[in-house]
Image (cartoon, rainbow, N blue to C red):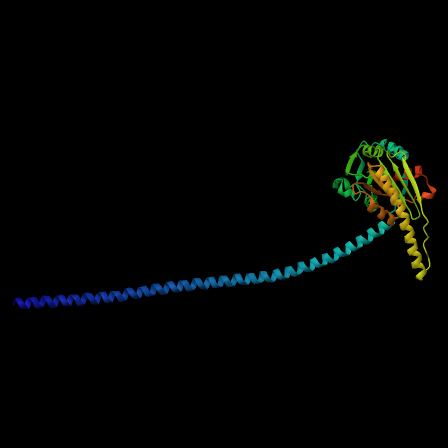
Length: 351
């Protein structure tokens, strides 16, 4: 009896275990399906999102392609316009150059004259008498190689006529220029002084600034003057720019230029060159003597034949200031006093 009860309880226990395992298995199967469905739903959602992203990317790509096509079209249009403007600019530049060249060819100085030291003093006295209460009188000191645009302000430069600037730029005196310009064109001229302008300066006021030029002209320069021509040259030393203390005319026999061709011309030119070399030896001998006797020389003024000036320059001490003056002085027709007056004269340009 007791054994049977034990057996029944064991059977019930096994049956209960089987039932429990089957339910767990059943529930496990249901849970896995749900998880699978959840995973499928998640993947479907991701697919939908990717499809939307793909569509957005396609839309953006289409927009970019449209913009790119528009950009290419715009670039081509801009390049065409740019090329048109370049052609137009070149055409206008060429026309402007042509007009400027024609106008420059037509522009001429109103006149020129040489002013002695006495004459320039009278001239400056007259300039000092000009007064413009509105402040329209421009004075500019321009060292050699300096343009007006390098010195005065752009605002003032705009008030100077183009024709005046063109004429002024044509002038290239070795000593520089002093411009006296009335903005109303009552006065428009420049002075090339006998001695170099060393520093640029300018003034716009109710009167012209002449004091700097007067100061330069009143200085007592110790000067060596050489007028060089083949066969006849002049050398003189003026310790105070007033009168020559030492002067000498050097003459040599130099053949005139030969006009025929062939061997005879070549031989003649060789003999002429020998004559010129002999003449220059005599000039250099006189130069060395003056340089030895006069140690303090402020400047050397050279005029005459370009080639002979070049030879003299090679023999001058490097510390000496050299001024070349274009001049038609002929030694045989001019004495020392006239030579000094000429080399100390100022050149006046009416613009």
